[in-house]
Image (cartoon, rainbow, N blue to C red; front, side, top):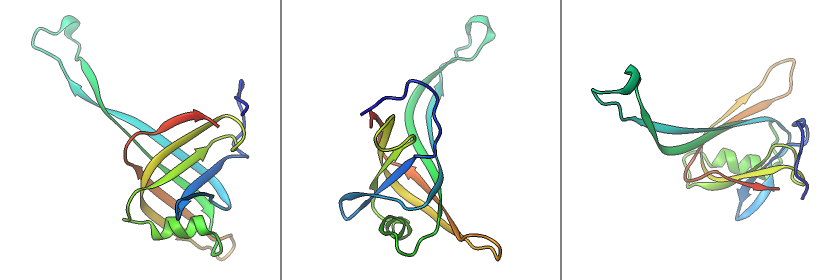
Length: 140
């Protein structure tokens, strides 16, 4: 697969969610965000050099959101909807498309699925999730 060597647009981004053991494209994705963070612990002592606090990294975590046009006929959206509070399932995210750039893979717990309907717009859904375990980055 090709690796991006410059900036790129997200118009070809793809999200896949585990549907009965098969990574399945989520239909009508508008945007998604993956947040990674690490916790820290303070190691400052009374004799701190330069009067500055010091820290060490500890545990890593990831979470995210996805915004989609709501689809009744999409198996992946249905699985995400049903997945609130269920056992963790695999999520695959391709920021620049499934055939170029990177793939991020991790186990997630779906924490929310909100549906928004407006009289003058398309019905949309926002999905939130919490990662459990590592977020793995590979070349798509």
